View (cartoon, rainbow, N blue to C red):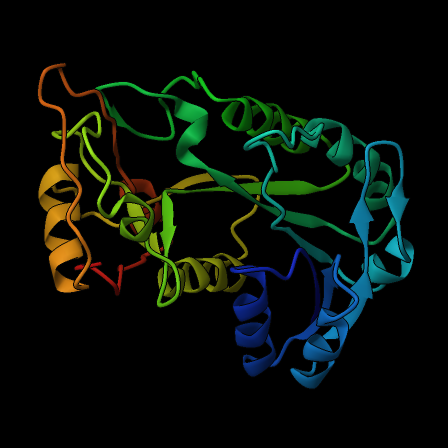
Length: 267
């Protein structure tokens, strides 16, 4: 039975771990919550309490990595509000542990925020120009991992994440004068996220970079107004006074290289 270590069994990492168990993998899963250890165990995921702190890694990180050849890193930077963390520093602390382990391949879950705001159609060849603190730190971590010769890293840049229990319209409902009404949406459903990761593992596609956003790009105003009505929420209103700025994330490479077909196209 092949073993994989998943650092971060959160909104995406936990259902991913469940899917991998169902596909015959043995999973080491990490969490920072003691309450979640029982949940992981019930799902046949071997649980580890691990936290990356600013100056040390807390928990049995060596045991967590032991005997795994693949590590999936799914811990997004916590940089919103007053909570500013040194995400780069945390990954720098983690790297020596990966180097000393049997890990040969790393899958790093990143974000299309590394491209910043622009009006282009964006491919993996597009220059990175992050304008948020999160995007800037993710871009540096991507390079840090992909230039390490001790293991091969594939970077997966997801668009906005949605699922049965998570949709951006819930945060936008009823809000007034939102900017960029004509900007395209770049979203991806949790189910597609998991299927793409399974495809990368199945095809052993390492040392590569992929954009992953559903090829469905209506404008923000059209999409979020319609979605709010569908969900019986107050539709947001938009400010049309300023020109809209917004990129279109192209996932053509992912479809071509992995022979992947998106399943959740209507979002």
